[in-house]
Image 1 (cartoon, one colour):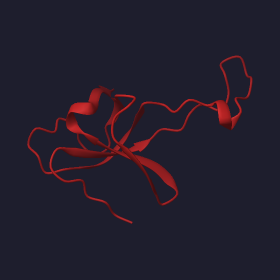
Image 2 (cartoon, rainbow, N blue to C red):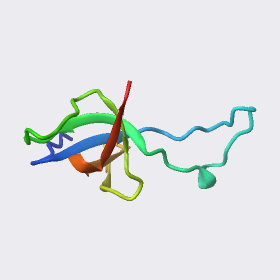
Image 3 (cartoon, rainbow, N blue to C red):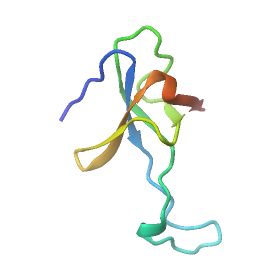
Image 4 (cartoon, rainbow, N blue to C red):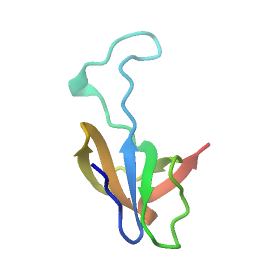
Length: 87
């Protein structure tokens, strides 16, 4: 399925949470926290958007709408909800 965000919105594939701690302990699925970062998959047509497809971004915890696309979690965010680009 292909989704094209409109206006100042960005489609981001949510990064998976770590399954193991730094010391080697496994984290159960029900206690994992979702990361607030992901990879940009598509961008809207607004000229104000500062990210491009392929960028890894950090976004606000309580922003956007989460959708499952092709069995993977994605989030649609407004451009203003993106906090930083990870390089």
